Length: 151
Ligand code: CDP
Ligand code: MG
Image (cartoon, rainbow, N blue to C red):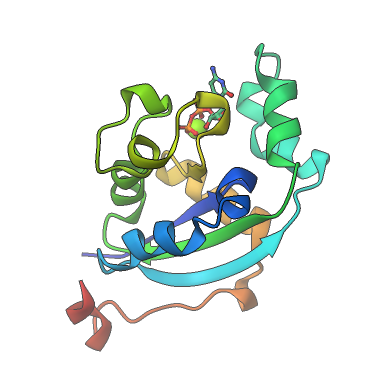
């Protein structure tokens, strides 16, 4: 199966609460590989572009305040079905709907501080990854060779 790459962000509440290790370990133990990683404070422009589909919604301005309020850990994670696997581990957007055992279900209470972003679809992943990483900042794992045994 060809591997996918997905864009994950541990939002400022997750970084401030010291949850990066806990969240990353949940992804790593599925067998997903880190293809790229960086810690940065999103500019308002970059945040507005990233959440452009929500422009005009009632929560858009507060969402931009939230995601620019401190450092965000941005990850490109790679592996078979990476997009769907990450979304499953994240849990539903609203923490009160997120199952126990998911990141949002276990660690979040409110939709406006729901810890994490993950690309929703292949189309989103393909435009979100270059927003944060150049090609030379990404590692490509060999999913047809020895790395296939990792997952
Ligand atoms: O993050 P996800 O793809 O699960 O949800 P979304 O519907 O694409 O919304 C993007 C983000 O907007 C959410 O993760 C929340 O941080 C925020 N949001 C909010 O603050 N209030 C809402 N009613 C809906 C979303
Ligand atoms: Mg979304």
